[in-house]
Image (cartoon, rainbow, N blue to C red):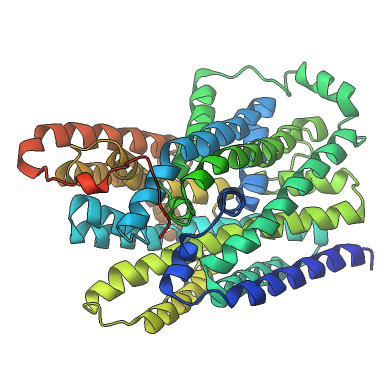
Length: 504
């Protein structure tokens, strides 16, 4: 009975999401509505949908707790980096050009983008397979992040919480895909902003932290701002870069730009997205960075994935705020899971199955298959979530492999006219090969039961390999394109930005 307020808050949230799904779902009629929302989203819808998909329970629980444990208050740099590089700069550099070319050339997915830009059907098939299968660990990390919260704060079996987010995600997708999801994300984004603001206020005022005076005391302690050695600086920098620039190559994030209404809305979205990033990401990492103020390593410090949930529990926040926090994390997780699932399923259907069936699928059947794959994807993610893999590791494997493969061929394609197919292939394969190394080591450890220290060490270095893959991919794309320019270059001026984005 003590959690009755929490459950009422959750119930209200679920009802609101269902109402949004039913009402907005009536406007979703085509594959374009399902995948890119008819390219009619305004600045607030687009920016909030981008932010809600960006920051999930993975960030609030896995990354905030992990960086706080390892780096104390230095971990806040991850949130600042996410706001500056992952939100402001990403929108500044990518939004208008991506929306422009995707609208003019009727592009609905990232693999289609590659096929059009590099005139390569094989590249479309390769990217669709990589996206579908390697988004699964990221989706699984969303489940895992929320499960730890449910177990600590609500004292319920994590399966119940997983069923809640799975059911809500499926409802949003089955009601109308992106068209419904983007409108639900607007509401969920508002919940996230107010929830994080209230949570920061409550945590700082708690007896465990001691208010502003306690913060100053913590900042001057070796636990609050520890002296970082060279390897720690490299590791922290890798986390900042991977979680910030990694979004530049993630298809579920890029697809948010496809749905923007016009150039003016894209410009406004820059400001909204940046503010959202500073508040939500900065606030989330700030909360995690206070863990050494509340716990002591080797005494009562929880396991990495349970640090933030336990902090919320010992802070003795009110049941009303606790309910808001749970809804905040569910909202963040549902929006992210929807984005991942829809991107993976639509990509697999449009760019792989339709090609294999030689375009025999009509509009109606294509939508049905996308929705069926959504169910399969969510179920498969649940299975992976039950493996013994920390949240941070699962997310770094997924982001590293996908962004390591696609960031350079996508971003450079918008600006570098002489970038060609050979360069793009070299960047994709090179980045993929580097980024998959820690994931393979983890698979060997899980399947083979290996206790080899070197494998365990490499498996834990996902962010470093991810950043290395992104950098290597950029170098390969540019250098190989320069060498093979005369052989592979083709006239594709229609692909490039003209400065004016028109609606369809």
